[in-house]
Image (cartoon, rainbow, N blue to C red; front, side, top):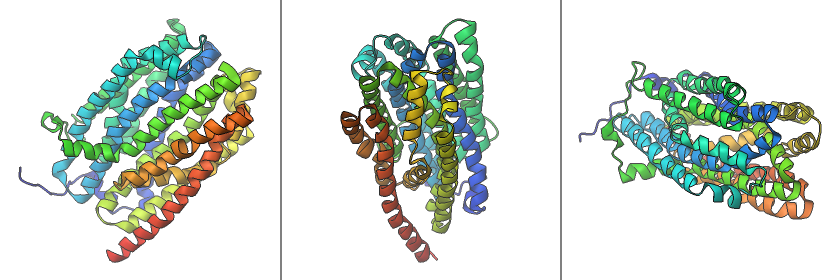
Amino acid sequence: MEQNNTHYAGPTDRIGTARIGKLLLDFSIPAIIGMVVNAIYNIVDRIYVGQGVDPLGIAGITIAMPPMIILMAASMLIGVGANSLFSIRLGEGRRDEVEKIMGHAFALLFLIPGIVIVTIFVFMDKILIDIMGASEAVFPYAKTYLRIILYGGIFSAMGPGINHFIRSDGHPRTSMLTQLLGAVINIILDPIFIFGFGLGIAGAAWATILSQFISFVWVICYFNSRYTKLRFRFRDMRLELKLTLKIMAIGFAPFAMQLAIGLVNIILNRSLFTYGGDVAVAAMGIVYSILVMIFMPLQGLNQGVQPIIGYNYGAKKYDRVLRAYKLAVLSSTLFVTAGFLLLQLFPGFFIAIFRNEQGPLMDMGTRALRICTIFLPFLGFQIISANYFQAIGKPVQGTVLSLSRQILFYIPLLLILPRRFGIYGVYSAMPAADSLAILLSAIVMIREVKRLKSLGSANQ
């Protein structure tokens, strides 16, 4: 086939010329709103179940989360990896490869999550009891919820994975609407299914998968509309080993990060049950839901800055890459600091959103929330730095920084500290790991900033 390097003429052109501050606002605000909406996906079920069904239902959803995180990891392996490569190729003007990347992503988003779903279905009982450590009281809630979620697992993987391309195609607001549509439908359907139809925790799961299916349909409709020249074509879905491995290599950092989160959740849930019982599992499920509302906007900022960094790095505009990175770090730091102050000053208010009653759940949740967020003001820098390497197509560095909190530091501390300090050791493992990951990221990024400045000087 004849090589066609004609520059892709479209909304992406401004990424290399417009003011970085305006670009970051244009791309990040819709992505942040979209990720906040995505966070609602993660917590709205727990809120309804905690307030109207049973506090043990929160523990059941918490126990079911690691398998769901693994499914999300499969989606990110392909969606994020393909999107990063997509942005870099646009910046390089290699138009002929763009749709082939999209086609490969579509096929892989069906294949890999499908394998994960079938595996979880086959071994569900063993996974929930032997690996996740579900107690006899919590197991029925966890199995009911997870089984229904897996029915729509393909759509929950493909929708977010393909939605990345809408944003990098220069339509971040449309990308945001995709997530907003699904979340609003989920919020509407949850009380109808849980209370109106009397389905309880099963109703929460059905509401989630129906809303994810509608989001998937919306995404497919976009790529068959007049708003983009890009199309999914069957010829581009014939998998080529070299491109497949490239996509997976770039997407490995967020994939490994999600797997690490799943592993951490398994170890964490078992430790919580050992030192605090089902109430401790439910309390930490609430804490994690609150932290999702902090970290999802950071992921939105990551998604917004990623095409800016990737495009300009591909175009060799290193000064713009550095400005985008610094502005993203500053913005993320301001945001997480505000979140830190609110959580430290009013922890009981946030716990009450999920279960508004005094007792062991409130006490455990309040203490855990305050301890776990000690180093929150510095985590914006750490998360943006890990994403930076993914954006420029350097998965090794991105993987190391992404995994430093969860694998290198958090898991060992989670295994060691509770043996000496009990439940407080479980809580303290998170801030201890955060501090070490922040230090490692600072060392790596000081060297990278010097490298970027050197490349910029040589390119002038």
